[in-house]
Image 1 (cartoon, helix red, strand yellow):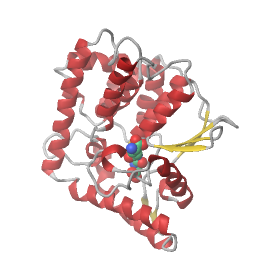
Image 2 (cartoon, rainbow, N blue to C red):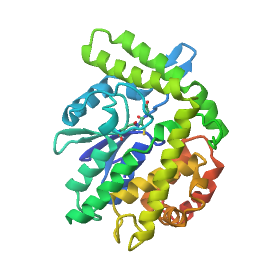
Image 3 (spheres, rainbow, N blue to C red):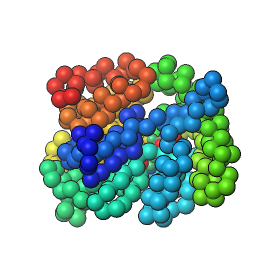
Image 4 (cartoon, rainbow, N blue to C red):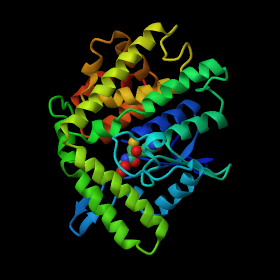
Length: 323
Ligand SMILES: N[C@@H](CCC(=O)N[C@@H](CS)C(=O)NCC(=O)O)C(=O)O
């Protein structure tokens, strides 16, 4: 699926990236072939100095700037821990990014990409219903997931409930220093290109902001508190729903996004948040059995991030889902 020789779509993404997992799950549900660029999105320190992540490279950033024109939002200018373009602005150095060669379009932002794919390809599953009321119910969930503080949960050190795998915590000790050093190097190396300079400055502001709050107890507690509230609301919504899915009988984009996000929360050791939320617990069990989510969220997480024992509970989906 991700290696078609001459496909309509090309995806720039990362196996571990939550936003990329959302898009790949939609591509999988739609059975759409695409050319895959699985990018290295962690900068590192090598013997010759910093090795910038691939999504900081100028040709990729220029592609994103093209996509950003369609979005028409200011660049991101600080850090909230949420990756939402609506509230936080456009991140010029991020994944995923979709190229549609048939329509000559470059599309950024996972939420926009998912909606776009559903609009251009209606079969075999339609993820956004035609009926206005049903569509509004799905889009409400899409909006809720888009506001999840996923960056804060992944990068942040919670003062009293940090269930992240130890190996991940170790990576997070230096991640911001490497990101910042890499962006400073990109800025220094591209000082004659005003567009790139603006893009790297915006990204630097975001990452410096992230570094400043990664051990901020109030910030990290607020992120957890937000997620607890949203999960309680999800439990109520699922309790009132006529079927297993979040917006009615049919599997929808809301379920794709929730599925990916609930797998991530599990990976981060946050599944205890739904121990007293039986509808959410059942929902997770249902969603991970879906082959698209099993492959693109569960398996991709296990294969690309440091091991998390919390994933054992979900990994059994792989016994039944095709490779
Ligand atoms: N609103 C954007 C957010 C993109 C985003 O934050 N992507 C993350 C991965 S989920 C990323 O690129 N992280 C690496 C980095 O920021 O350096 C979307 O949903 O696509």
